[in-house]
Image 1 (cartoon, helix red, strand yellow):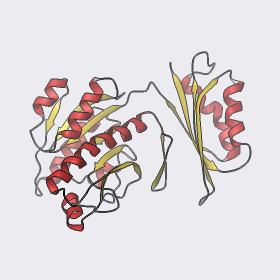
Image 2 (cartoon, rainbow, N blue to C red; image 1 turned 90 degrees about the horizontal axis):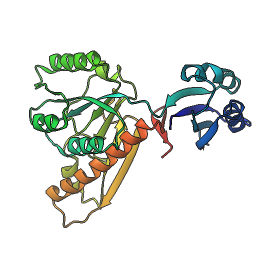
Image 3 (cartoon, rainbow, N blue to C red; image 1 turned 90 degrees about the vertical axis):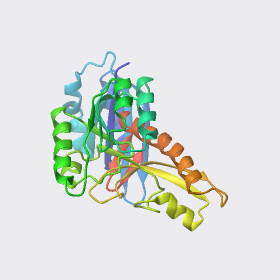
Length: 283
């Protein structure tokens, strides 16, 4: 069933919810999901409204302009999305295969509503996996001396195939602002640490050294500041002093697969609203 999603941010004030509901009702539409959040610290209001397009009298391109008077009256920032949209996606990976393999399995099972156009890696290791799923594979080796040239090749691939979303499935290379700026809030990374703790390299080694009792992972949007982008999803597992670094890494890898899948699904279903360096996730 085709549906439309309105993602709304506005100064909180009386009449907001009624105005949105009346807009849909006045056009004979039926709201099937509605969720909202009031941020007390900023006075901002966030809302996600999903309504049925079956029999809705406005064409898709007419919905935004028709809603504009309501948005203007309440000072709303509005995004209009459609749940049958299938974005063109590139998946980037390095040596660790677990997140890539899980993502591709979910995609084949129909649980990831995306058009995966390519897999790009700085190693050749995943060519057979890509071939099994029938996805073009690009191996772009990189060294400190070739970093700029490798990124130029990567950007050329993304732009040539009109990629809309980039998923970093344990891609262990730092993306330059040149690429990050081309995809604002459209690069999702899975970080093998419960950010902001233990950022950077070897987080499980750091965790083991500190004797932590919880390990965690973080999915976030990529920004120019390393590992500081808006957080989409996180999860943790309880551990003990009996587990060594290898065991922590294995347990963390299981979390990484789950959390990346959740974050990607939230993004694809238009459930994430970015507000500054935070997100509101209507999960």
